[in-house]
Amino acid sequence: MISRFIRIGPARVNWTAWVLWAVGLFLAIYLPARAVAPYIHDPTNMSTLMRIAMPMLDEAKKDTAEWIAAALCFAVAILFPRFRARGLVRLEDAIGRFATHRAQAILFCALLPVIVR
Image 1: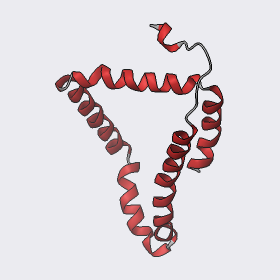
Image 2: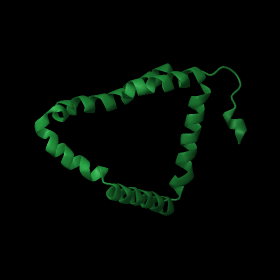
Image 3: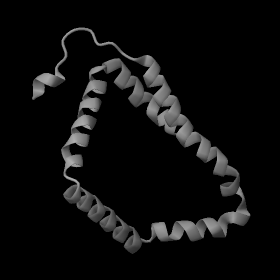
Image 4: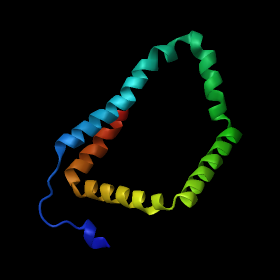
């Protein structure tokens, strides 16, 4: 129903939780990148990095991995029907609630590329 997504009245923004999630996302991306940066920039490690990266860049292996991942998702959906709609409905509701806070959503969309970069 559309009516559950329409909110009347002022919306209260939980800025503390929003900032904590943004900092957590930043740290989850930045700290591992910082940790492996010396290893990546060292030319003596280039052969190891290429040996790791080449299978991921091979089209046939990438396509096969995507088909296997899709098959696993399909199998989980068939074997565990309770997880199908409930998780997606919760996710949709959470995104809808987040989007109703217009300033927060715009700020998040503006800062996300900066945080990720």
